[in-house]
Image 1 (cartoon, helix red, strand yellow):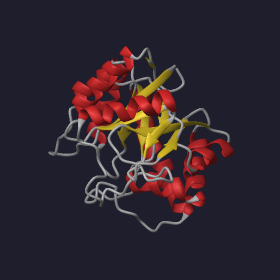
Image 2 (tube, rainbow, N blue to C red; image 1 turned 120 degrees about the vertical axis):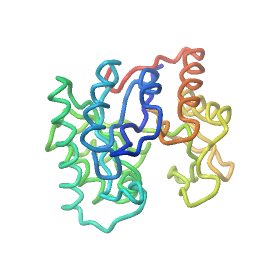
Image 3 (tube, helix red, strand yellow; image 1 turned 90 degrees about the vertical axis):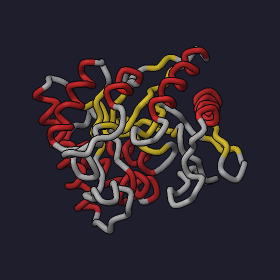
Image 4 (cartoon, rainbow, N blue to C red; image 1 turned 135 degrees about the horizontal axis):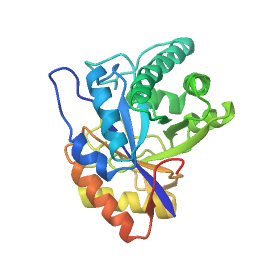
Length: 252
C-alpha cells in the first residue's frame, strides 16, 4: 500500500511571507506550487522549484483564479475557454522555472474555487483537463476524489490522481464542506490523523453528518497555509509509516 503526501506551497509573494516551506518540503513527496495568480510570484516560484528539486519532491503547478485578495477561494464567472487559457498560462509560467532548474512538472492541481468548481461542473473540469493535456499529456491531473475533475482527466487521456484532505471535513456527496462554515477545517491533529488513516486504509471517510462515505485515495493534501501544517505533515508521515504505508510521489 502506498500514498502520495502533497502540500500547497510557494504561496508567499513580494514582501509577504508565510508558511514553513523549507521545513515542510523535506517531509512531503509532492509540492503544489502557486503560479502567481492566487498567490506566489516569480521569485517565490523560482526558489520553491529549486527547493523541491533539492529534496527530490515531485513538482506540481497549482493554478488558481486571478484573485490575490481572495486567495483564489472566491468563485469567478469565467467561460470554459477562459479557464482553459488561465490554466495553460500558469502551467507555462512554472514550466519556465522548471526548465531553468532542469526538472519536469509532474502534476497539476487546481487551487481553491477553481478546484471546487471543477469537481462539480463538467465543462469546467473538461477545460482544465484539456489545458493540461494540450500543454503536456504526460502530466498527472490531481482532483477531488471521485469527482468530475478525475473523470474528465481520464476522458481526455490524462493520468488522474484522486485527492483526499487531511484537514478538511466532507459532505455526504464527497464534496468538501465550504470554508464559510465554522467547522470546515480540522484543527485537531489526532482527529486529522485518524481521518487520514481511515481514508488510506479503508477508502472511507466520516462525513460531517456522521455518515460513512466511500472515496479513493491516491494522494493526501495538507494545506501549507494552515496554522498546524508542519505538525500535521510530521505526524501524518510518522503514523502512515508505522501503519506500513509507503509514502511515494505521484507516478513513482
